[in-house]
Length: 128
Image (tube, rainbow, N blue to C red; front, side, top):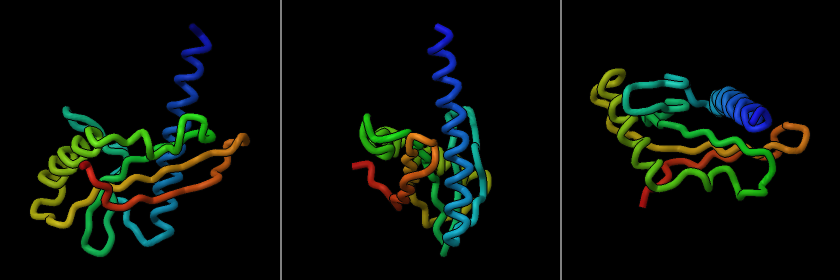
């Protein structure tokens, strides 16, 4: 059981690292981070970013290797629908009147040395 707890702790650390890395990666490409690890009673948004009049909720997925498929494969249509609802809640409190909204995914694949092999930014993903 200790090994399972250690693995869960490592996964949480990897996820937190991925969110910080994704924020810096997006900033370097002209995005502004409006919120990180935003939480409400209904759930959590990894990042909320803005650029060129669009506000996007960003789901960050970080995986070591591709044994279980690419990181973005973990973002299901149900997850996208939930993120849309959460982004609506965020906008209602932080940016009333925002109209150009999107759900994005930043997928980070790590190598055996835990360095990023690939970072992919999928913009305005569909839930259909």
